[in-house]
Each structure stands twice: as C-alpha cells, then as structure tokens.
Length: 521
Image: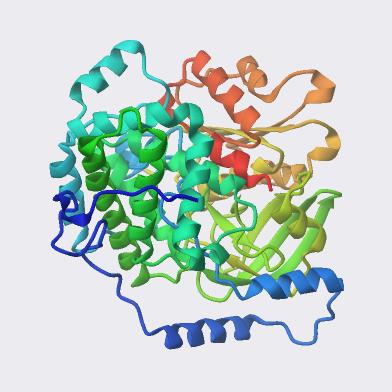
C-alpha cells in the first residue's frame, strides 16, 4: 500500500519546536512499567478463585490463551466511552437542567493544573466562542445559519472536510486503520480482531468533535471523558502522534479535491490541542483512580433463558452514582468492551449488579449470560453517564424502562428513596410479553414500600400499545423530568412522544442511541 505523505513538522503548523507533529507538551505521570505490572498482577491474584473446575473446551481455551497476553488498547478518537457529547460540558444537572444525553460525571476527575492551558489553546487557537448553548435536537435552519456565521475559520475548514468525506466515511476510516497498522504494526495486536465497530466509533468521534469544535465547554468535557476512559485500553501519550499523522493521511487522501495547506494546518492545530486535552485528563485521572477494576462474579441469576442478573465484587472501592453505567470486558473476548448500567445505588458491601440480555451474535452479552459463573473474573472501566437524579430539585421523575433498561430506572428509584424524598416517581416498565417482565416483582415491592412511587407494566402483545404511546394516557407531565432507558428504537420513539406532549428537550435524559446500538454485542 502506498502510504500518503504529509508535510514536515517544519511547516510551522505544529506549534512546537522540533518535536514533530502532535507531540504532547506533557507526558502523564506513570510509575515504572515493572512496578505497575506487578501491582496489577497482585490485584488479579488476590481476586483469582482457587480450585475452580474449568469447563472451557480445548479450542476456546486455546483462543483465550493466544489473545489474553495482549493488553487491551484503543487509540484516540475511539468514542467507546463518550456516549454523547451533546451536553457533555454541563457542570451539573442542577445548573443546566436535564439533558438528552449523558454529560460529564460528578465522580470524574478534575482537570489538572495544565488542563486550563489546553482549554485556553482550544479557545485561542480555534477562536472558539466561550458561551454557546448546545441543542439536543437538530436545530432549525435559522440556527444552522447562525452557527455558520459564528464559526471560527478552523471550524469551517474542519466541517468542510467532514462534509466532503461523509459519503465515503467507511473508506476513510478503513484506510486510517490500515495506514496506522502499516506504519505501526506493533499496535495491531492491541485492537479487537473485528474492526467494524471500531471504525464506526472513530467516525462518530470525529463527527462529534467537528460538530462541537466551536463550543469549548462541550468539546473539552467530551475529550476529557474520552481521555479518562481510554486509560483502560492502555493508551499512552506517545500513541497520539501516530494516530494524528495517520488521520491526516487518510483525510488528505479522500478529501484531495479540497485539501490544501490551510486545511491541513487547521487539522494539525485542532488535533494537537484535542490530544493534549485527552492526555492531561488521563494524567489527572491516574492520580486518583485505577485504569480498570478487576471484579469477581459472586452471583449469576438466570432470570429468563436470555436475561441474567450478575453481581460482582470489585477488587477496590468503586465510586459511581445511580443511573450511571460502565464498560465490561470478559476473559473470553479480550479487548472487547461493552456498556452496562448499574442496577442499584452504591451498596455498603461494595457489590455491583448488572442486568444483561443475550442478543443474537452478541459476543460479550452471550458470554455473560450463558458462560459466566461465580468465580469468574471480569474487568470494569470507570463509571460514566449523567442520567442521574438532581436532588436539588423537587420535580417528579417520569421513567420509561424497556427490557433490561429497567436496571438503571430501579437504581434511580432507590436513589430517591435513600435521600428520603417524597417527590412523585412514575415508572412505565415496557416489555413484549409477560415473560419479559423479569424484574417486575422487585419493582412492585418498591412500590409497596414507597407511596410516592407508581409502577405500570406496558405489555405490547396484550395492549397492542408501544411504551412511549402509553404515557400519553396519563399525566400531565409538565412538572416532571423524564428518564428513558432501553432499546434504541424505544428511546427514539419515547423522546418524540415526550416532546410531543410538551416536555422540553433539556428535561429528557437518556443514553446515546448511537452508542446503545454498539452495546448489544
């Protein structure tokens, strides 16, 4: 393959002196490799069950042994941890109201001392307006014109590039990874064997950055979340220059009709600052939290043939908030991480619970439902998401949970109860059949204990009524904040239904639909 070439670092666009393109200004503080590996080995050894009889087949065990040695890694612009940046810059739900997508978590690391410098560079270098609202839904045409009028020169160039390559985005991302692995073959073993989802995530992250390039607050918070989340893949500061150069190579090849020195310079400036924000966030997070947690499965409750409730014990304290989610990796599919919501509030015994539905061809979900047993060790990424309760408000909660989406809804109910509040909480629990209401008994027990809670089951096959449509028969919901969790189709139709009955977008919270599509496996 003929690798495309890019201008040298002496073209004046790198912003540095002799360090080459995308060279980070500061390396994350790390301990020597041998000490870190020894510490991780001690953590895992402490969690390893003794004397468990294995039931793995020879071929499965061989595949596991072959791939287990490779440490999970994922490089810049893989949006596995950033479910959505639409409102990632909000400092708290109390100050900004509810969001249609997750925002920066309350448990996230604060920026290190150097991070304001990177943020300021984003503002100065890209001429980013300091204050701009970010809609959770497509803007009307007038809003698009206003956005274009206020856009910085670099933002216009970056968006022009993305518009040019959008029709052939799959070719661009495929070429980027091919170029990365040709130039840096040592990195290939750090990625999943199947790259389809990986390519989609790269494109989504690029589109997100391009969309919010003029909104410093939103973009920086999104990038900080990505930088923190990438730690679990083993991403290092020195990976970012390689990614940046290959990204420029792929874009310049497929946007050749409009590509020039000015556009290249805009991308170099943007990526240099973007990567620095992510590096700084990872360095700060390293001082306060591990890159991942080992967790032992202590209970595996098969509720239906394809739904299991898993309880795990982390090897270290795991801080999170009700309504948040994390990413899980199993020993059977190294380097494959999938998102799952916590099914309870933080417990005094430190245990965590997840509801998992096995889906067709779902690698991780099928392993967790049909193969995992007590004693198995999995890994957890950091907590993320902001579908959390604003306890400074007395607004009611309107909760729509479909299938295993009832898990975070249950956690939200428990959170309200633990805070001693008597605000109304209305839960609509959707399912296709009675059989799919696998956790209805738990929800009904909560209803019996709390008079402010109402639980309604909506069964499609009985009522011939979709869950979002059912809420129209109740209400009004003018004084409620809405929470949705479930299949992507339910969330899309649910958001439309809630808007149609007058609930403003800023009071509707849910996980990113795009990311939910990828979690099914």
